[in-house]
Every structure is written in C-alpha cells, then in structure tokens.
Image 1: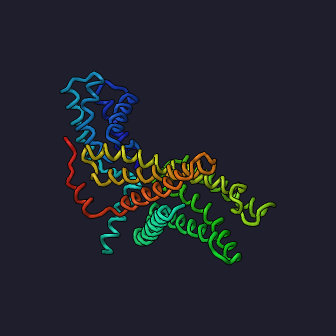
Image 2: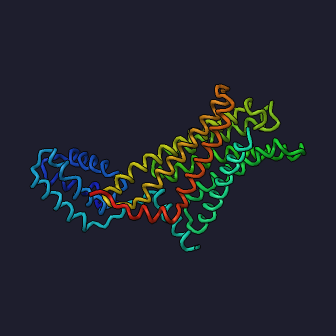
Image 3: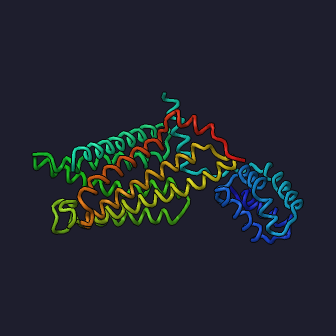
Length: 109
Length: 242
C-alpha cells in the first residue's frame, strides 16, 4: 500500500483540509477512534475506516470543537473519498489463519 | 503422582499431539506459515514430553540414553519454534519481534553447543537442575507462552471491538478468548513447574494443579482451532448491540 492511497494517511489529510485541525491533530483524532474500534492504523482497510467515520468519528470531532452538523458533513465527505479508494489492508495473520484452516477442513469433509 | 493426575496429563498430551498433527496436515493444503509453526510447536512438545517420560521408564540404558538425546535436541527446538510462531502469527511486520526470535534462537543454540562440547555433562539435558540448557529452555518456554497469551488477549480485545462495529464475526473474537484462556492455563502450568522446582509447593497441590492446568489448556486450544458446529452456529446468530 503506497502512502498516497493508504486509507489512514488519506483520511488524515482530508480531515486536516476539511476542518480546523492540523495534520498531526487530525491523524491523532483518527488514531483514537481506530483504537476504540480495535483497528491498527497500519493495517486498516478503506471499508473499515469508512465504518469508523460513520459510527465513531462524528463524536470525536464534536469533542474537538466542531458542531454536530459540521462533524457529520466532514465525515460524509471523507467517507465518499474512502469509498472510491480500493486500497486493501494487510490481513491480520492469525485471523486469516482461522479462515484458511476452516476452508481446508470444509473442503476435506 | 496419582493415577488420575497421570491420566489427565496423558489426555492433555494426546490432545496436543493430535492438535499439532492435524494443524500440520492442514498446513500442507493451506501453505500458511502460522499454522505450520503453531502445529509444529504442539506436535514437537507432545513428542518431546512423551520421550522424556519414556526415557525414565525404559529398561534398556542405551534406549534411555538415545531418548535423552532426542529430548535434548527437541526441547530447544520447541522453544525456538514457539518464538517463531509468535512472530509470524502476531507480529509479522514488527522488527523487534524478529530480533527477539533471532536472539532467542542464537542463545539456545549457543548453550546447546556449549553443553554438548563442554565438560561435565554426557547429555546436555542430563541432571536437569545442573544443566544450563534446562534453565534457559524453561525460561524461553515461559516467556514465549506469556508472549503468546498476552497477544491472544490483545487480539481478543481488538476483535471484540471490531465485532461491535459489525466488522468481523463473533466467532473470530471468541476464538481469541479461548486462545487467551488456553494460554493463561499454560502459563499457570509453567508457574507451577517453577514453584515446584523452587520446592515451595506442597506435593498434593502440585499433583492436583499441574494436570488440571494442562488439561484445561489443551481442551481450550482444541476448541480454538476446531470449534464444534453448534458453537459456530450459536455465535453466528449473535449480532452486536447497535
């Protein structure tokens, strides 16, 4: 995944552009929301980040001084960009192992 | 040890042996390093423990010596594979995990060579408390299992949060909970061994707790990797509270 289409970097850049937050503040706010969602910024996929921006980020942005409407609007804009971004996250090794094992078991039974 | 304790330890060893063999068999088809290394860890641990037990029971001194040699080679390998499995499973992209693995492997191999070539011991594992390899191995196994257990708890917390957002299935988070439970029981198992080595544990408590911890750990590990159908179906029906 290049830094240009890295979902975390992309969302951080957009958030800094669309709000009064600086780049580090924007990335820090997203990082906190990702932590609440149990996600790793290095491995997050666009669709996962979109869920975070829908469910968790509006409240986080309100805490940063945006009004509810502003927060909602910013999240919608970023979600639209994320939806068009097809970057695939690096899978969690142990999680994909279970998928592979279950698949192998099903095909052998 | 009483008969019940021995039966429990035997059952736990058998579960680990079959679990390891099954993971190794499946890894031939999946071609995945994590399942290969985790399977190898438990398969080798079970074989090594069986050889260790047999070496004290066989009548032939030559066979006993051969088994001791086998154990002395297998035991450091189990610890090394455990660390490699932790790295590949939980921290494949972290440089520090790779460095830790390499360091542990180098130290264990170094001690093994020192004990084989150095004076004092005919077999590196003989006279366990005198053997530096024994201490280093036990320490490596304990640290490796604590690492795996902490990673399993961490993953459980992460996947539980993801499940609440509808990003993963409940079964995945639950598997990490089982894994963490199994690892915790195995850490208790090793803590009992350390306490017993320090001679601070009453014999009856040792006889009771060691087989129990071993059996609980093995059982939970089995369900982690091969959950029964009814459990999968039940967890699939659980939707996160919106």
